[in-house]
View 1 (cartoon, rainbow, N blue to C red):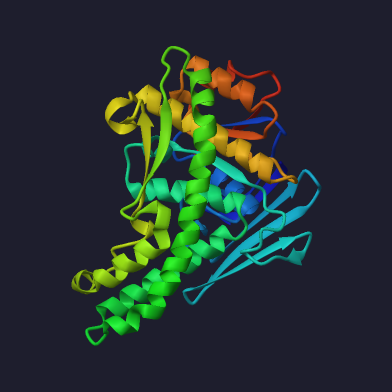
View 2: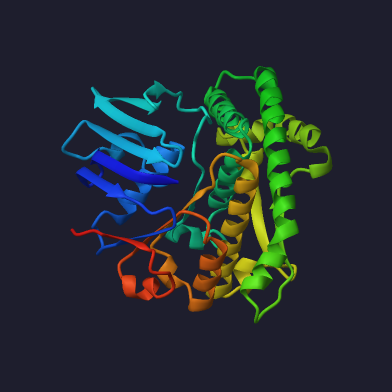
Length: 354
């Protein structure tokens, strides 16, 4: 949990301070009043990750730096600053005035975000689904971010080599070995996560949507044989060298895989209604919270609901409130009346203006 926040030159905020409740914090204001900017700052100071923008785009356009300070439940002072000079962006993160490396997991507070683009998770691109599951794994496994970043660097270098007209098949052997090793670890963790979700998903879904009972399953799709993934991927890379040279791009690996949601053995995107898809996304968020809390013994995840709570019907809002009553929650909305009736009098209301 965090109890106060100070923003200087962060997006639309020149110098603002906020105080928060340990429970529900309702952020109310018209469009373009800074609601999403506020929860983006919360995400950044807690997890060192923004769910929308990157780098210099987070700095107020009239400045060359931003600064965020927050106090958490253990009275730790968290400070984060970005400075832009000659197109170079420097970052500094401190915990009780001690500098912490950006990649360090030390004292990060896990964040769970439910925002409008999540509603396209089922029907959207495979990249969105891969990114979502990879993000959960990064919260669960300390080494996953390192492995994923390593894999991405290998793909970049390998693609560069594929574009080189002088490159020959023997030049790719060391890169293929490194790609296969990291790819195998990524796929193993994705499959492990999917297996855990499949053990929970039907129970949670049918508890929320009592009127329709489905057999729901998450399936991992890859063009390689999972049982002997590493060897099959290596063979695909070697056998398709000329094809990859033609396209100057790595055509095989987990960056092309997909995660599919099935209702009664049929793909949800062709069967499920919009309401059922919303319910499915809520279920994934609930399971995500369960897994992160089981894995993190120091901090419970903070929940950020950005402009989606009002799209849920009363029964779904009620279930979420009951389930997440022991969490710190931030909800943005343009209309507090739609949401406030579902909460107790202890709700902290933060009013924003244009």
